[in-house]
Length: 117
Image 1 (cartoon, one colour):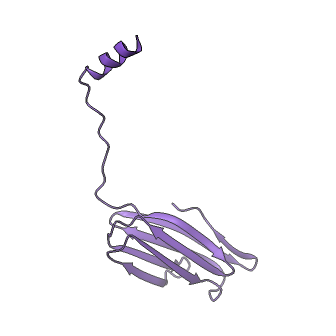
Image 2: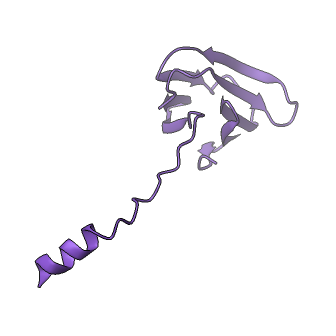
């Protein structure tokens, strides 16, 4: 009986569902770790697309770090947050129309990171 059902299903000619494809690479933030007062950021799955990594002070809009990653599948950087004053900062990773961001808050009690959005 199972064989008959399987044969009927296979012979119906129903096309397989299409898998949506996106031409733009979606940066995958694989790791963001605080070590002492440093932030270790690793970005992967860039598919050799031009990618911009930024760190901006949210109070002043001053760009504190910029790196253009070109023709690589991944990138890693260690940012020294100990030298920064207390405040809120945003890490942005931009590839094409895709932007991923993480908020960093530095206080007298330490450094906190939001989830990646």
